[in-house]
View 1: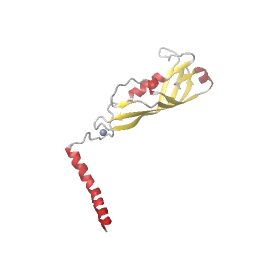
View 2: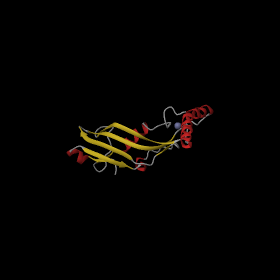
View 3: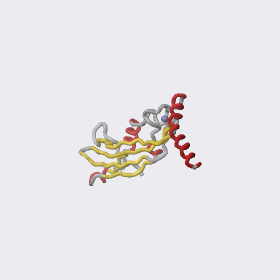
View 4: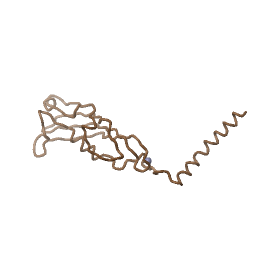
Amino acid sequence: MSLKVNLRHLEEDAVHLKGELPAAELDLGVSDELIHLGKPLRYDLSVELMHDAILATGSLLLPLECECGRCLKKFKTELKLTGWAVHLPLEGEDKVSVENDCVDLTPFVREDMLLNFPQHPLCKPDCAGLKKKSSASKAEAAEKPASDVWAELNKLKIK
Ligand SMILES: [Zn+2]
C-alpha cells in the first residue's frame, strides 16, 4: 500500500484512501532512543480535486513504543492526527510533483508526523521519575491497608 492518489481517478470522484503504511516507508528518520517505531501508520483519508488543487483530509495514527524519559518505564502510545488536512496546488510555483498521473502524499504525512512527534516521552505527564527515598516511603504507606487485609484474612483462616 502506498499513499499515492491518481489524478485521473480524482477527476471522476473523490478517492478514499484507507490502509497501512509500513513505518520503514514512512521513513521518519528519527533517532530517539526512547521512541521506537515498528507498527505501520494507519491512515483514513478522503482526497478530492478542487480547482487547481488537491485536498486531502482525514486521520493518521502511528503507534509508538516509548520509554519514559524520567522513570525508563516502557509504554505504548500513539501519534494521532485527526482532522489532518493538506492542500496541494497543481498549478503555480508551489505545485506538487506529479508522476504518472499520481501524487504521493507520503512526504506531507511525514512532515506533519515529525512536527507532532513527541519530544520527551513520559509515561504520564506528572511522572515522578525513578523512585527516590521519599516516594519509597509513600509506597510503603500505601501498602499498609493491604497488609491489614491479609492479617484479617489470616485471622479468618485460623478460625
Ligand atoms: Zn515515567
